Image (cartoon, rainbow over all chains, first blue to last red):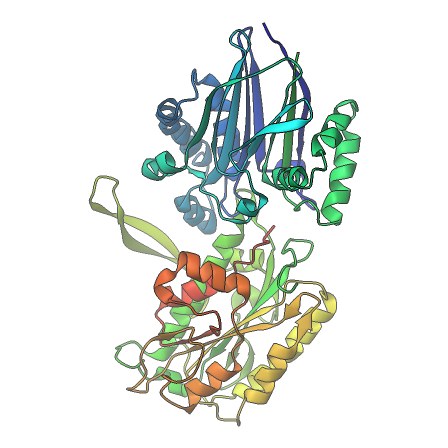
Length: 246
Length: 280
């Protein structure tokens, strides 16, 4: 039976913002049988997006399987939780109107099954998963080309939009996992850089795995600041989860 | 590349609304029963409301923009009153917190079961209609050019300021083209100032025309002058307009000009004008 080791869990706000303002969220749930990881990226243009991203990543941990039907079955309850959370206190006029527009978030979920040595993954929007085997990324999911990061992706809304959700839901089922594999799950700014570097055969995973040896997280944060300043990585909230299969 | 600067609280951009409050604005818009001054007040209130909502987050309003409203008619100058009185440019959060009053309106919304239900919505008012005096458009643009110079000196690397000018076009202090030209020649390191001219006209031949690339179908010298002086839409604005407002049939050489647009269209203009790819 395989095992998994979580090598990194980083979340940093965009430059100029505080961590409280960061609209990315992640969650991890490990049992004897499975490891589930989620990264959600709340849309800057909506309000209460952080709350929505956090609820999505936390509540979907409870989902047994990652089928489209199952994920969609849980959304009404998560939407209700969000409504309850944001309507707790009176809001100024602009917050009330903005609230009517709802909040939006991208989400990706990865579930590794230790006994079966398989993984399932689903995504809505532009948070991404990369599967490394040996010296090669064998899966880029759900985006394979960096050009796609510049489009406005479809995101999960606090409003019911299930017809569209069906169209934009992406999933990978029962993919094989081997000892020595790595998984990287990240929000879009870092994923865009990672995708570009794969194409250039720059082996970007070596940089990210290198940071895992640093327990202070400082080196990843410093590196991220430099890459943002050099405009190699978009100044956006950034989350990275790294998993090694043992 | 131009128009790519990040818009953030550390590097805000600027919006200037220039509104015609002259006596001729009491005339009705062509084919409508609404006076031009009322249409302008409705538009500016809606535009300010939308801009505020765009910057609203759960913790409050983020100052991505500083906003000025300049009126011209019997006098030329800052049009804010009350808590904002006399302020040339104010952070958007101050606009948000200082409407003159908040009205409640009822609108029909989808009930989720194929029907419509009434829903109350808040409508903040900063400006009431004013129609008084001449149309000193030259003076108004001299005023805003000075405001823009001061802003650009303080924010040399900002996303370029956007000027939204709403008028019936009938300047009474000479041809304003030179001053408008000076406006669109001003620039930050990220590109030139963007000028949108929204023309409300009483001319019976004035039909609704949106973002034309040439002046062939414009009815008179006023609309032609305003079209000529408006900025071309940026590449990103054209992309947004094509993707999200396909009904506008925007061409690649579209200019920031609308003739007799209703509020919805003016909101579309603002949305297109405030959708840089890099709002942070």
